[in-house]
Image (cartoon, rainbow over all chains, first blue to last red):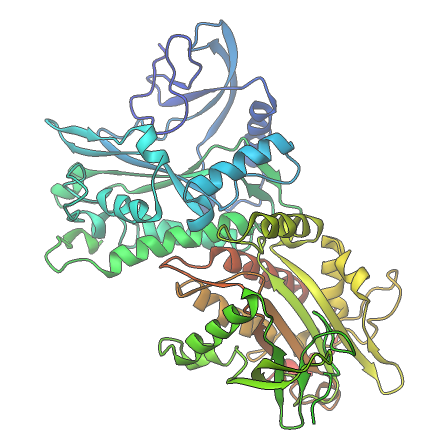
Length: 291
Length: 291
């Protein structure tokens, strides 16, 4: 009944001896509740968020639906363990291209332990978090039935520089993502995926407007997940470009202050994507821009 | 010819034995070029900024005019020293209420020395920089000819908590700023100073729009200076509410990335000021809002 997700691009992947998320056939995603405070914090967030009546519907749709918790067999074989039961964002997709972007120059908060802070500071400085306000945590780009997915390994992803990020954001919407670093990505799907009134950029701008105002939550170490399907674009249809927020193990009460750390990083990501759209070659197929 | 500025609210104040800025009668402000790299970095910024043709005029007006450098007698009596010659922002004002707000959750940058970073991190955490994305570095509020200025001392300012900041931003536009912490500030000038199409909020929003796009500069440890005159408001005129950016000793090349650290803090300040405007008591004089 439960299986390991096919399309996980970041975080621990479930396997014998390794605890990780599971999915079922009904479109639900089971995330093990870690025994440390992270698990309980994420549950507290989902519970509070689900019942928070001040979240507008056009914002709520950026968050996975929460179905409560359930005791299921853990993926590492350690027996029954409580899991968060969430909407499986990916299950409705056939061949999803996915990017996990961890938002915020700072992934730590002052209330955390000094050990945790030190670890985060080192990683924020070693990756692009500090310089760009975000870092790419993982991605896969669908090529074709023959070539399958282009999916750089974890070590490569962790070494991404600012220039790599600029390139990866172009590769993500290109038909030649796996080409060597010398070849310019063709950005064939950039207009269809990033652009348009329902594209990724428009959705990120909607999120931004909310973050300029909301003072309920501060999202540390939270990711924006960007997904799309290539097939519909090739058939001249909409690419089902989707933005979701995931990973709420480090959400704090906003205490009446906006999440300036998340907002700054989000604005930086928006600028990178805007620049790609503003610099498209004339030959790129822009049909699906008119939606 | 040179004298110590009357209305300095933050930074070292010039006196016998202490190096600080000077002004003259022609409306110029002389800032000593520190012998360490800070001085030269600020000069490099002003020189580059002055000749940067991609700065729109409606943004340039937020920066003090730069007149080059000049050798003048240092305020500490140490002899001739090169000074930056700048527009004296305050000189055109008679009884200015002034607030210096240092923007950004982070006042340091990775290229700085570890000693400098450690010092900044401690101060960012000890003040409201980390939590709010900005900290108040100093202020004075004009009361009347009899009462003069209300100007909390440096030690008190450095101890401001998030709640203090919320209160101070209300006191800054109140006719009873110096009242004890028990009395609610009347916010008598809030609509005139913060509100309206030429008020502080409108100016901060103009700056914000630029920061969402500009990738030339990253402004660390830079301040937004907020000024206004009380007299015109009492006479039903515009309060000459002014926003200026000051202190560019730690400006870095943006390298194609927006200044997400400054932008996040600026958005947080904007939210605080918006909340004051959205919660004004009905009795407050709103005449000058119609401009």
